[in-house]
Image 1 (spheres, rainbow, N blue to C red):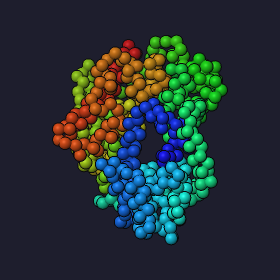
Image 2: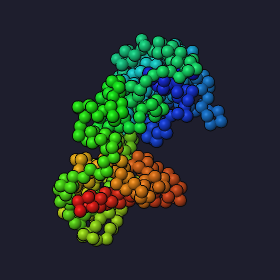
Image 3: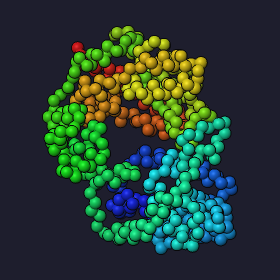
Image 4: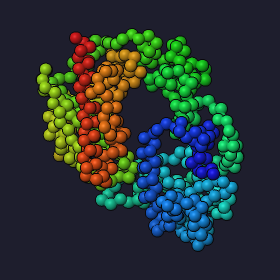
Length: 495
């Protein structure tokens, strides 16, 4: 059976459809994709009430599992009875299946409303809806409209959530009209692809990343050398594939390319011949001269909720819920630590703003790694709480960026691999220190996992809540301890 998700996979790449059908075990584990799907389900469930009372077809279950045949039959019954709003309306035509997110009775027929957790229109959504329209029309449904329901990024929540304002509806008739004549041919080609026993022969290309990163990228790109042009620092996607098609693939191939940046050339040179550490003592010292005691090391964790939970917040707004703070008050002084973690389910912004003002004195040197993120969050807190604004903005104005000496090229070694994120710099500087290895943490290993876990803590049993909070604290603490170690490495480099 060809579903709309499989149809869209085929539209991206026929090989992707074949692999996910016959070799799904080759797909990469993708926690970000899982989180996106969970968000999509939350948004989809909420959107069902957009037009008032509705009937949900997914109520048809057998032993807890969806029964597609019963869903299709139930949909047929609801349509015959002219139900005004049917959610997950299910249709099948000659092996082509789709479940319409919202099917609404309009103008003597039914309109398709496809729900997405995105904030804007995309070409793939027109492809998706055109396939649904094809299936419905061949099932005898008069389709009177095709729409995208997505998130309104300008919506600011009041005391109560207003789903009429949370969602915006976009008429997709133009995009669907462009795709509609292609659907039948695409279905035929998809069926031909799935009928083949041999894996389709498609080389890697831009479609591997458009409209989504393909979960089979690692498998399809396994012929690439360990270090290739696809790993080069800040090389645009289009240029990577242009190089690839010209046979410029390995680092050795790329050495002759005149258009590469100094950072990219250094990345190649250090990989091809281990040059140890590249250290510009003057540049590093100039950076260190911008720091003064007492020196603080700050890192935030934030969440981005598609559906805003708190009054005054927008969809996908970065809301800080946690920070870690290491600090040293004088040269040779003791390394001290403070931290904050909000209560899951409550608006954390006032509490975290007050805690920052308690923990960081005014006119104090603060460091962050990629300071724009911390500065942005502090500015937002200052705008929200005018009584705390002078202190908060003073903190922001005194933040220095530990990323600077690495991004500027003052310090480099081959283990950094062209990346200057702290997750790359730290193991490059301290390759054999288990205390600095994020893989050794329990439960939370990166910011995405922290962002996903925190909002869910409120729904966990008490003992699991305690474990989750402990894991979040340990993760964020390592982030700022890592900054301390990086700073120490910079000090050692100029001695």
